[in-house]
Length: 251
Image 1: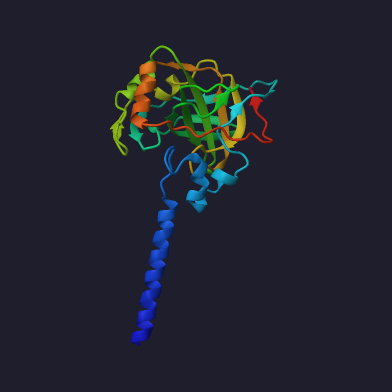
Image 2: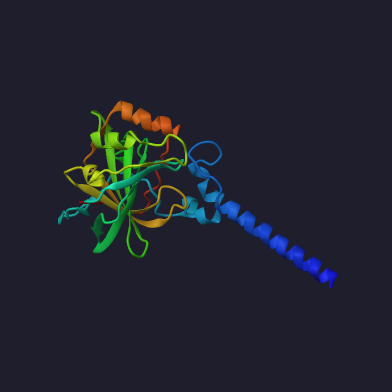
């Protein structure tokens, strides 16, 4: 009887150790510098395999595109405000109130948050930008759509200034931000855009993401760029990924 109890106790202990190891593996840190750079993401966890063996990865260099003669306008309905700004160690993220929407391919996607990368992740005709903003949307099935806006160095951006003013400098920091129409104000007026299929640009690098990259840029001052980079402490952009057989549609 004692032997059976010992065997059972050992089995339970091994199970717990194995579960803990798997949990730690799934939670292994990823980053942009050091030992966990983008080139290693696919090996950090089985859940990140798409980062290394995916066929439709983002970001990309937008060069050749097919012009859509219908030129459909981007169907955005941004009327709500923000509620908080967080520093998650990988970016500065602005969470928004529920209700802002994007209609794409007949599907309705709700805006969840937007965040920033410096320098830009996507390139347009080989050009990188000092700052790129990603608006992340989900539909009811959990499908993802991302709208990207590029920033050129120039005059100070008054809307970014509201975010930068309360931007948490420590990882894990959160600050309240109650600004109406913040997302709408960060969308350029002219909405000529590129469309392509891609992925998340961070682990788990999930594919099947609908990407919309606006051609029109906004401005950001040199001081604002440097303020963001000082908080991040290093570039937070994933390198350009192969386009392979993907087609880019220009609307």
